[in-house]
Amino acid sequence: MSHKDPNVWWQRSDLCYQDYELCFAGHSVQQLAEQFGTPTFLYSTSRVKENLLRIRTALNNAGLERRSSIYYAMKANRFAPLLNFIKQTGLCGIDACSPNEVKHAISCGFSPSEISFTTTSLSAKDYAELARYDGLFMDCDTLHSIRSWGKLKPGSEIGIRINPAVGIGRACNDKLQYAGCNTTKFGIYREQFDQALTLAAKYNLIVRKIHFHTGCGYLTPELEQLDHVINECMKFVDAAPDVRRVNIGGGLGVPHLENDQPLNLELWSEVLSKHFAQRNLHIEVEPGDYVCKDAGLLLVSKTYVELKKDTLFVGVDAGFNIAPEPAYYGLPFQPVPLVTDDSALMPMTVVGNINEALDIWYENALLPNLEQHDYLAIINTGAYSSSMASNHCMRGEFNEFLIE
Ligand SMILES: Cc1ncc(COP(=O)(O)O)c(C=O)c1O
Image (cartoon, rainbow, N blue to C red):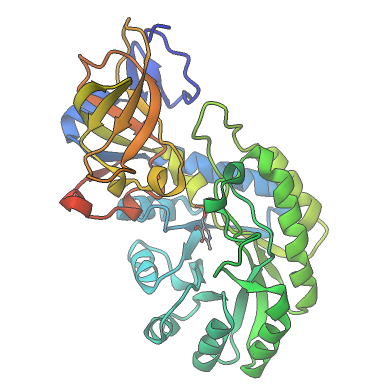
């Protein structure tokens, strides 16, 4: 197979080869690499907006046009120019999970009332700080959280994050499931739900919302499981008479591999319609991955190519510390050449510059002869990459740019 005119699975109109050069959002990626250097994250604002609009359309198609809201999960990517852009689209609020995230979202133009906060192991200091924001909505994930918020804000409206004991995740990947067979820290289980309602009543808290987020990266094959998860969650809704809103979390995924079936949002909206079209409830969704992941590229420089036993290794100047998902969750990030040529494709294992065994971008990626290539682009790095970066091995430096 030659690489001259590749028919690769990830190509789309704004990310494709034109005249043998990779173009992203209308730009030559080679020129951007030469201009900005590496490692550099590029985020396409048009793709982010398209992704948000696609979710909005699907909610409308589910009959939820005036009864639904999107909250972008900023943990996925908090790059300030990106958050400013997202605010300007007017398409969503913010899902935040730490006081610093709230502060940052506000500095990027969001008001506290546009922020939905999900607690997780908050300290007394965290609660005190959050209580100062008028209009911030709290989804409490533990009895401790209800008690802490109730003491600070008696009489207010809250949500309860529940755990339905069934989860959902990309290709049954256990590491991506927040609920299921294993007992997790996420949310209040059915066994303690009555106690949670009693505790809320003690502080005159009104339980307005049921919130759940039971896993990440789900695609079309997992939609049946989503149906099952929502079924279980509705048992909590039915047991809480003051509930008016249901937050179905994030978890909407994008393909990472050739055989991944992209999430069919028409089918997704059918699942929502089945459960919510006839119920007088406001539906919230808080996606991170789906909004930003495929809107981002990481540009890296090739450092070497060398055969060791029967594996051809390609070293690059960035490691798992600035985009940890392949290492943490076993989600491979496809490396992509910036130019095409006549050479045959060969399997190569692309590795980073961190002295850790798990520093592997992709095993056996089919790549052309890289002798004439200075750079590679690693696709799908727009979410949970820069936001999770560490300075491990003092290799934490990278650039980030928004492109239109
Ligand atoms: C409570 C909550 N909501 C939303 C999200 C966003 O999930 P995703 O990026 O998979 O859409 C997460 C991710 O961990 C989460 O914990």
